[in-house]
Image 1 (cartoon, rainbow, N blue to C red):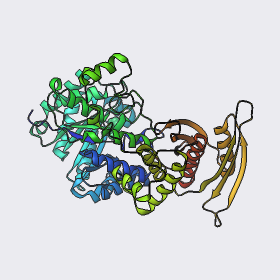
Image 2: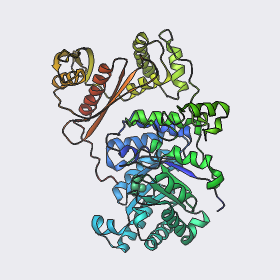
Image 3: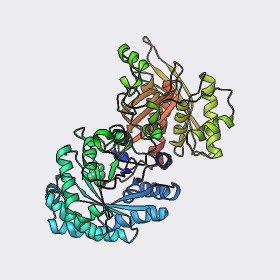
Image 4: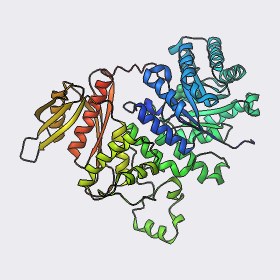
Length: 522
Ligand code: KIV
Ligand code: ZN
């Protein structure tokens, strides 16, 4: 095979965002998309425009504002989906791609769609042709491709390529594939469709991780002719997630001796930064031992290993941590740092902030700076995140006092300001609970007249030291079946919890009761 360039198609903002509770607001998606552009991915799948007004707006805004990568919108093989995707990616001009999909496996044909093979081919061809009216850059995915009869899959590929599909993606939708078999399937397609061999159309793969094989399957596919990999940062995605981009990229780079030499565009030093941003924006914490980007990925605790590393790094390290963006922390800021220093550090961290944004973050920075000696880059990133996850506030926290201890009934007094009320009316209440967090959240429920069920709660220290900022992420069910995420940070973990919960309440109220209609997702 002549062409060894692998196209990196990032679907963090589409398949990744489909993860329950991972949904991001427009501002968060835009920050992630900008970072993906700095990471130098080739394609950003920015969303599924027909699903909701929010998804449409996100894809359109990213298509307008993010320069460099191709911007892609997903669509089922139905006219209204394709037209919405075409409209949403239009601002990207020639960099706009429409990704149409339709299930092809027998089980999906018989039980989900109730369609015969010839009908599937007709719908797929019609979908590609309709998408072609908007852009030349059209991708087709036979959903559940890995479980589709191989010869029927060849027929589908030939038909959609003849209709103009420039990329054909073979999804392992349910994470069923194993490397040898999947590699053989890709080879069969490569050998059977002349346009795949000539490069007129490209084979892509999209692997889910239900058996923990998504990365291995993606690599097997590359070695058998696939030239586009669909993946996500930190491997987030539907169920067990998608193939993790950082793992595929670093496996190809580190083991070219065994896998063969492949090139990709990724600026690997941006990997850790991208991972942290996605973890923050999605609220999906990265497991400590996660390859490449987990806190422990390069931490050597045993004496024997440390000794070996000091003598020769390669004794226990197969990659250089700096190559993926670890290390290199700047001098921390302190309460004496001025606004210009904060603005310049934000710019250095890659955040695109207006003067108003900087003013708001600087105000929080001053509060934090009074409480802790050093404000690290991660602290600052947490403040930015808190700022951009803010929705138009209905309620803001004015005062919080908690009493707790092993011989006291935990009590919280909370004062909230109703920002939307004409005179900014304030309300105060107190609650008791099983612990101080429970007490504070109950008081917030009473004041805001909401009743949230806490589905998930996580607390992590943003930076080092006993005075570290605590960052809380919550997932709350307000009774309408939609899970709302909220985040908050403070040096006081009870305050961080109250801020996170209030952020979720505000999101819920701002969505008019969170009536997002995210239905029919693949
Ligand atoms: O997993 C899947 O099949 C998908 C398709 C839409 C590509 O996400
Ligand atoms: Zn998927």
